[in-house]
Length: 450
Image (tube, rainbow, N blue to C red; front, side, top):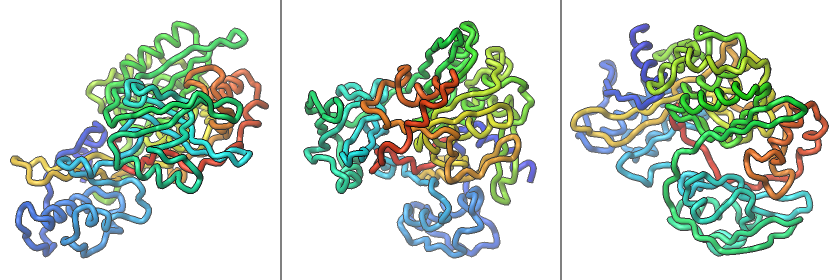
């Protein structure tokens, strides 16, 4: 068992795609379906799910191998599972399509205190189709493909977006409850480039506060983080605000690299994370140094720790789009320092997984599995946040329109955190429950890469 765990956890903790060959257990009487048939694919799916799936003990004993592959996969899933997914690498239509990954922006439809319905652009990715078309954070969307947005059609308009390869938007700017400077913009489907880590240093009453906006956690980002923290340390930063409000996660190794550079009192051997799987996966614990090392492109713990800020507390900005590796940052720093969370409750993705694919040569199956494989816990054994991690200080990002640019000192969440740093605690208490969110454009349903 130990040898099995070591072999497959190495793949998980490298946080890269797992390449496996299915192996049918001898005691099973499964027909030998012809290669290339739907049934043969489903047998492969079933065997791999039995081996790795966190809830494998809840799968049906006799699944229907004649179902279409996506329906067969869905028939295996636990009712507790929100995140497992399956894609056909030769069929783009099987991939998750969202406004963010198709066009490079996100929006939210709000009902304001006076009952007014408005759709506000909250995120525009750099070097994205949306940015190239002229969209900016804070703009108001009046119409999508010719239809004016209302409370009753907001969800249906959102659901129709993946069916298009262009978006015709009518947008304008917010001005004291009115939308001015209206214009029509066409956004074409396309790719967005990797997003940079944004950093700033603010000085208040002689104290310097560092600010980091981190969009996601790709492998290899430890180099960028090390550079940012070296700048913070050289400038005498005494407090840190980490903005993870739109961060769906990514590499746990990169999340560990970030965590290694913040608290005082840790070493490379300090425990960072525990993975708990099914009867095959068991339980494995990893230190900071071990977890970081599973990214082959990462700087090692010692190099990163040289720029550690040695802080006793950190401020983290969150929302319902904060998920997975971002939630690991929040939860796994708690054993070592005070984590002051501000904003909204996180998504609640307390799980990890890796991609499972067919590596036979020639490859016989083009489907790729992304199942929930492990639950994750911090050094104190704390986890189980599937309902999300609630902030100590709720702050409504939409309390004040128009939305200000991310990283600008008067942007609502950042201003609240800066106020908390300087002990102006009354400010953010007035910034909650101002609006009702009718719908938000992003829907992070797939496991992705952990």
